[in-house]
Length: 85
Image (tube, rainbow, N blue to C red):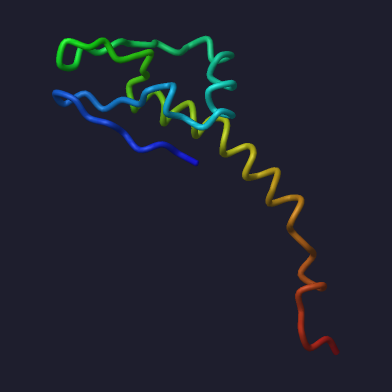
């Protein structure tokens, strides 16, 4: 499931610790991740990813997975026809 962005001073971001465990694990192998830390009310929050980068990463791993699931669950049109002649 895609996480919702948090916003602080016009910076849209996600905190890695708030992501589902599967995504946290997969992100460890995302070499292009530019992790940031944000100072909010004298507290350092992080590691975080800017939301645009998270969204691009999410789409890059999720879309191929969806295509594979579609192949598994798809059936030929003939099987779906109700009234066969």
